[in-house]
Length: 132
Image (cartoon, rainbow, N blue to C red; front, top):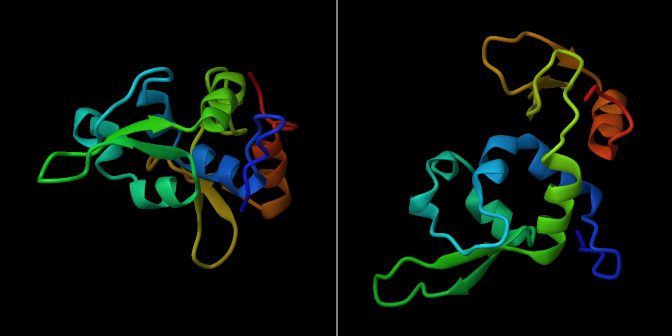
């Protein structure tokens, strides 16, 4: 997966990760550094995947028992400002998506039983489907 540095856009997989964890990414300060411990929404999020996908970066630290200080990558910050701050919702009215083990997708709202196919989720991730 690669960042498209020239346009400041995220690749499709990176955008899907952000869409899967909208509350975590909304909680991250856009222009400030942060520790994982300072953002409760990151406790259950796969922060290692965020790092490996170049969505967040280590700004400093991580040595001698001091927590690392992180920052959003520039392309992630730009994408979040453009797409997540005014995020389209799924047809069910929620924003997060979950990959189901037996195929298909659902929203991450536990009280919702809406299911979606891959084409609909790809359109959602591309911003071509949903409601504002």
